[in-house]
Length: 155
Image 1 (cartoon, rainbow, N blue to C red):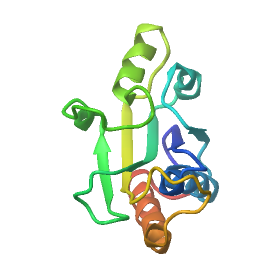
Image 2 (image 1 turned 90 degrees about the vertical axis):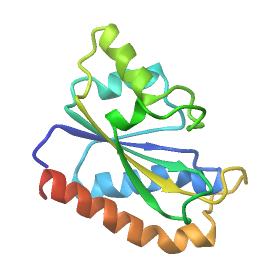
Image 3 (image 1 turned 30 degrees about the vertical axis):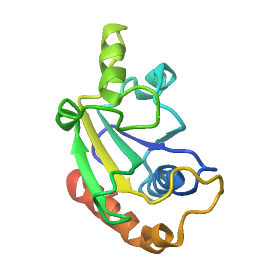
C-alpha cells in the first residue's frame, strides 16, 4: 500500500451479524498487510491508534432496513457531516472523535473511508453470523479488497 493506512474493524464478536466489521477488517488487514485496530466502541481510546495515519479505513455494520442484507455502502468523512440521529451503536461518531483528536493535538487522518455492511441481526448473542450474511461474506470481502487496491494500489 502506498499511503500510511490503518484499517479499523468495528463490532461485537458475540452479537451475530455485528461481528462482520471485525472479521472483514482482520482478514483484509492480514491479506493486504495493513495495520489493524479493532474495537467494540468508538471512544477516545482510539485516538492513539489513529495518531499519525494519513488514511483510515473503517469497516462496520449498519442496519437501515432499506438495503438488502450484505449491501455495501461506501462513505467518506464529508458524508458523516450530513448524517443525523443514532446511526451507530458504538458511542460517539468518528467525526466527533477526529475533531476531539485535533483539539487535543493528535495528528489525525485527513482521509477517512467507511465501508458499512447492511446486516439482519444486531441483537442475538452468538458468535455466528446469520446464514444470509455469511453467504455474502466472500463477495463483500472481494469488493472491499478490490476497492482498496484500486484506490491505493496493491502490494
